[in-house]
Length: 391
Image (cartoon, rainbow, N blue to C red; front, side, top):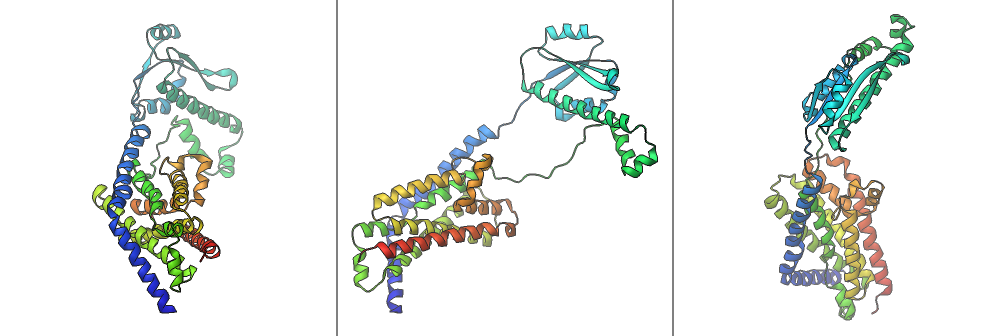
């Protein structure tokens, strides 16, 4: 009996591979070449829309002050740095002179002065002429926030002026150094940030679109059920479980081969990225298992080829959305939590970790989720197939 089951497994897998070989050209065109073209299309489109550089137009700020700008020297130094290369500060003597200049200029007037009625806090008065612009919004937000923080420092000084230096140092360690920095007027600090590693738009869509389209890697199991051809297997003494598992093995081999071929072309010839081979092989096998779970479940539930195609299309659209193949789901806020239930998204994140050379030990839980979901789908499909398939 055991030999009969193994022979049936070998015969079924060999037959499915021969059918796949005869249809390889269609598979290559639809599930290798087409996803590459579509990935490039989406990648270039999103790169032009989301990754375009913002060019600021020059903005002149006319400044009139009673001397309060000395307290804010750090702020105005920042406005004259490369970070605000589009800003030009021009000092004028009086507000009347500033108003005259603004009559012929689509710019900003800025008056800085001390308000002695509020314990010497710094106040600003804006004169804005012309239409609103991105440049004006950025500068106004920056200066307003910086002045607010400067006034907070002044307020703290006023409240703590009654305490001696020794009392302040005992109660607030490092207080004198912090106040010295605040009194110097340098309220802006440049902090180096770690570079953010992320896939380019093209890399993202080349990976995610193929993972979504790979849901169509299947065998002719449903067609055989529709045409009652599985009766021959039953007549030879093979039970339903072995028939179902033989189909799952064929799907795994076909899907793993196509995934390996696709990423060999994409990573080796299209993107030309050097990757760690062993982790890549592991994720490809994991993707093959995921596809096996999806298509085994469909084969177990669907008795007609038309129904299986409709279900596969439904799964495709779900994968396209939740896996980032249609939109970058990570940027959708609360909606991104749905990706925890999408095995293709976890597979995508594993490919992403390999491309970005991120530590794989932090991603093992994603592999575990994919295995659990895939095995669950295979088991559920087998249960339905064994109970419902007629002999």
